[in-house]
Image (cartoon, rainbow, N blue to C red):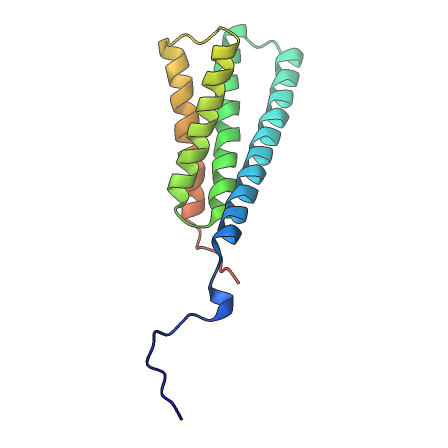
Length: 146
């Protein structure tokens, strides 16, 4: 009987190909964008109903919209981080940065990108909300991949 003197390889089921990893990341990104947008739309609809029904000051619309966008970005960051399953804080940061870049590009295209204090604060809210979503998922144990 010949002795095996080479490197031991991992079992076939433990080795994941690069294309499988890319597919997992792409699916997680699409899922995160969907859940973040759906959460934001639902909360915006609820906020619009509250503003239409109750006598709320018009000065509260921007803080309410910032809160809703932050919650949607946190959900997107959490879904992305849990979908990827590793480096969760960085996934949340990536989700927040993506949301901030999308908002900045949309503002630039419409001609409304003004770097005032409140607009920079909104971009920071999006980035930190994404990181918060990633942090929430980092507190849970990682799921086992088969």
